[in-house]
Length: 257
Image 1: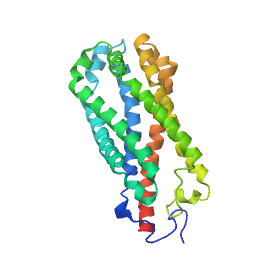
Image 2: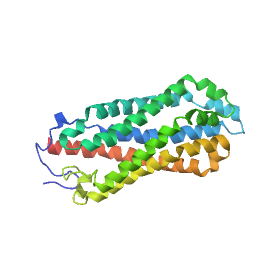
Image 3: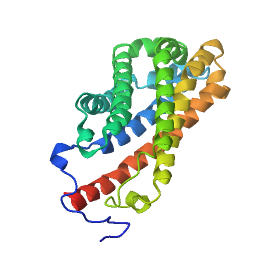
Image 4: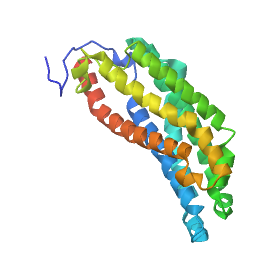
């Protein structure tokens, strides 16, 4: 017996030694990564302004952003690659989660590592360019094809989540487990979250092109605003949800080990 805060106790229910689970850190890193993309864009946009542009370019911390993207990219690449290649969640009957969390985290992690290397190696060039935002948009434009493709993949995950009622927590998990009898609640929540990131990813190439065509689009363009809103909202939710899962997943382990 247990409460919604502590979850039901079912000792021996899950062999955790055979099913390592680390989508807690993955969720926090994904959320922080999405927010980092938005904040870097804002810094590049400020550095591209006409007023005191040279001073703003000097203040642009490309090294700092390279470290931030590198740390988050390393976390997501390592955990995503391990989950993608070894399928650790299959032992507990959650094989689909290896695809949903592993492959998407791996893709985002590699993208962030690529950005980290570029910012680290080309930082001086970015600062020297009179329009660093356009330079960044021109650089990322070829890669935006893959980013948009990932957006389509996230839509597919969202549809699968609702169709098969995935993501529902067992009653042994604190807080989330209180909705175990209503699997569509968490299935809808997570599916909408994936879909919103997918919207931002799918619109990303259009945002990059609009910045290249019209610098003013960096502030008022519909595509740019859409990406910014989608990544900001989902980034905050992923961070908060991942932080909460540190409690709920620890509780699940304690209740079922």
